[in-house]
Length: 235
Image (cartoon, rainbow, N blue to C red; front, side, top):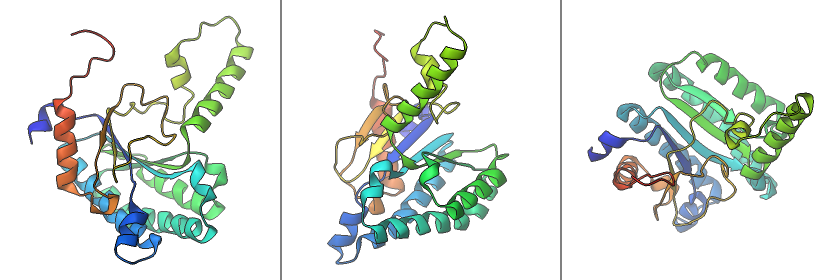
C-alpha cells in the first residue's frame, strides 16, 4: 500500500449510515447495526495487518439516548453480545479493548461485561481498540474542566496550558486521532472528540458504514497519506 510510508498512529471512525442502509433494503434500522458489526471486524483485521496502533469507533453518543427505547435497548444488547463474541479474536491478535464515555448511564450488566473484557485484554500489547459509548465531546470537556478546576483549587498558582486539560479528558494517555473517517456522506463531527481533533485530518466518504470494508479503508488511508500536515506551522 502506498500509504504504508505514512500510516496514522490513531484512526477514528464515525460509523454513520446503518439505518439508511437498512431502509434501502426494506428492513428495520437494527439490521443495519448488525451488519455494521461486520465492518468493525473488517476494519480491525485490516488495522492489525497494516500495523496501526490505535483504532477507535464512535458507537453511541449522549444524544443517541433520545432515540426510541426499543432501538436503544437493541443497540445496548448488540454492544454486549459483540464484545463477548470478539473476545477470542482480541486475545488471538493481542488487542487491548477500552470503552470510554459517560458509563454511569449504562446498565449494570453492560458495565460488568465491559469491565470483564477490558480486564482480560488489559495486558495485550498489540493494537488498542477504543469504543466510545455514551460519549459526547462537550461532556468530555466539561468533566475534564471540573476535575481540573478542583485540582487547581487544591494547588493554586499553577499555570494552565492547553495540554494540561488533555490529562483530564477520558482519552488521557491515548494519542489524538491523526485521521477521522466519517461514512454516509455527512460532513460534520457530531460532538465527537471536539478537543482531541484540533489537528486531525478528516476524510468523508459516501459509503454507508455497513458497506465500509478493507478497500474503502485503504482508499481513506491513501488520501491521508497525500495530505501535508503542518499543524499550523510552515515547512
